[in-house]
Length: 202
Image 1 (cartoon, rainbow, N blue to C red):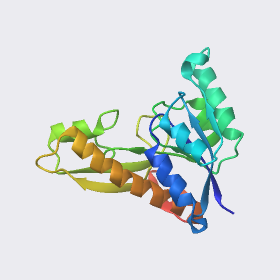
Image 2 (spheres, rainbow, N blue to C red; image 1 turned 60 degrees about the horizontal axis):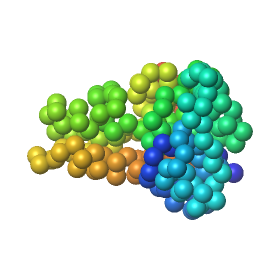
Image 3 (cartoon, rainbow, N blue to C red; image 1 turned 120 degrees about the vertical axis):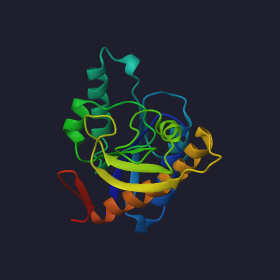
């Protein structure tokens, strides 16, 4: 049976689209059963609707507190009984309710080679530091910022003539391929987390 994916998005949904395309092949082993967002009117939700995937939106400002928002988001995701939750360009930090319900089954990408350059500006920070390689990291989400156990990484060379935009674009291409490959492997093989170390398999 295919693994049930709930994907959370905040923007254009290019990573979501890559997953939707991959899931069209039954051999991939996963199915996107719902797409959630923290705001309306974004292309990520439109992609889901075009694919016939149910959507839901919970905006932080519509809830009395951040904790209430987190609880509502948790319930909305739980209603779709996911095996794996993928944060695909989701620009909010999930909280204690969410991690309490789905901890160990939530993954996210970061546009740098963790633990280097955490936070919102990975490509810019890597370029400013002068590294020769950077890349993308897929990790298990925990309560920190980009601190969870590393599932996969993809290396992207920094070219002499790169600016932040050109570097970030190549990182995003590598990130999509890494995400699709890893989610498929998790769906087909499972994931084992032992301390800081992660491996595919039962």
